[in-house]
Amino acid sequence: MEEITREELSKLDRDSYELIDIRDDGLIAYGMIDGALHIEIGDLLDTDKIDKIDKSKKLVFYCEIGRMSRDIDDSIGCLANRECYSLAEGYVGYVRSKVKSDSDIKAKTKKAEESIRKKYHKQLFSPFAKACKNYQLIEDGDHIAVCISGGKDSMLMAKLFQEIQRHKQKSFKLTFLVMDPGYNEENRALIESNAKALGIPITIFESDIFDTVDNIDKSPCYLCARMRRGHLYSKAKELGCNKIALGHHYDDVIETILMGMLHGGQIQTMMPKLHSTNFEGMELIRPLYLIREKDICSWRDYNDLHFLQCACHFTDTCTTCHVDGTTSSKRLDTKKLIAKLKETNPFVEANIFRSVENVNIDTVIEYKQNGIRHNFLDEY
View (cartoon, rainbow, N blue to C red):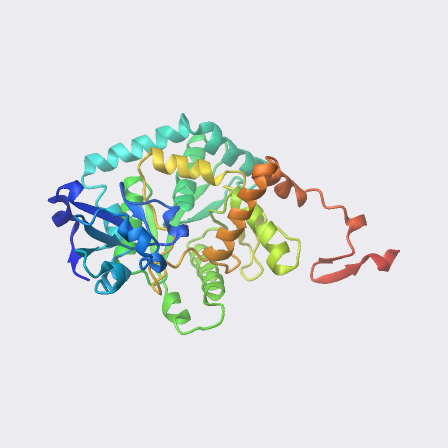
């Protein structure tokens, strides 16, 4: 498919074309180009969806970085007699174009910080501070590696750490750590531009994780997640850090609990902090533990920010590899299930979260502790 640049597109009358986002639901949740329609790439041959668009309009498709949309065969099916284009550099290129000058950067940084202190103080800073206090995540003398993946969660986490450090209730150091596991040029540039726009002084180091898992057929996302964690621990320790902070939030926690039951046949949760088993003296902390994802999204949209969800180079629509190695499909299905349950039970999310705080061992048939199984018959 022939490409069209953002500059060329900007010269066209907006009513002369339709912009179509072909990415999956997981990526769409992280934002779209203003005014775009969402038709997943698998539905492009759905005649009804395309035929509903005025035939006099050009069709401009975009994906994450412009590769998948460029490869669409515009001579097939309902696209055959339409004037079709692929938007060069895709969504990532659009996001990078949003901040252009130093004045824009300063304005974005100021607005983002003020919104944390005022408009979103109750939704974001208060639960962040509560998690840090209740779970004892920050102590005097800590040197914390704030691990930034480029997504909305880790970028917000960095800003919240800057804000809580400003309060000076604890004396600790921060290093904002970005690992480049083999990003393409567009994705790395997006992370760098977003960090600059938000006033986050990042430290970037490189690894070859993407190349290592490139030829893995079985559970490549799980392996990638484990390897990324190990590299982050190793680099953080090298830099003198004693903790790494990851950006998992409340919704990640309840989805993990439910996924463990439905897909893993086990009851477990994503802990607010953990001692590393492979890196002595290192801890993992999750300070967004009590923050709702909808509030993170609201902060992002209020500040007109656009972030990566995943920069995996295997596919434009591959979504974030989570700590347990699962990808968007299972998480998205679980998220939809929880939303459906909430329609009839508004307390379902809080109940899922509290379920792992109220485990009654007397009514559990079998459980594991420190790798050892215990059966209720042992002491019956």
